[in-house]
Length: 131
Image 1 (cartoon, helix red, strand yellow):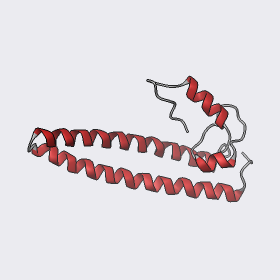
Image 2 (cartoon, rainbow, N blue to C red):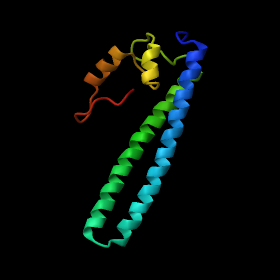
Image 3 (cartoon, rainbow, N blue to C red):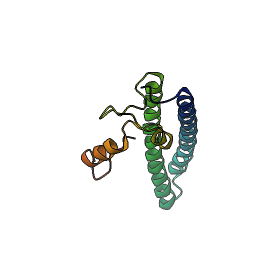
């Protein structure tokens, strides 16, 4: 879509790539921590340590899953940015304002369509995860 200038596209791409790198580092850190917690859990010095290690691993798994979801959204946004569909709402086809893209570079929908999506596509009481 032609609504974004070349400079805006470059700026958004830098933001997406920086976030991608940050998430990859966080995932590596979390996996290292999980390995440490697994070590503690395998030693089983007492039930409290085992419970803490298991809880920490569960929380870490949730964090990695969340980060992996965001990495997929970034990858998809970068593909759209390379093409001509970035900045175009996937629901209504209208342009997503630059300010919204700066706030949420992975946004696939304009704000009104996102609100509609979230109100009609919630799962298990949670709001829709699409950005």
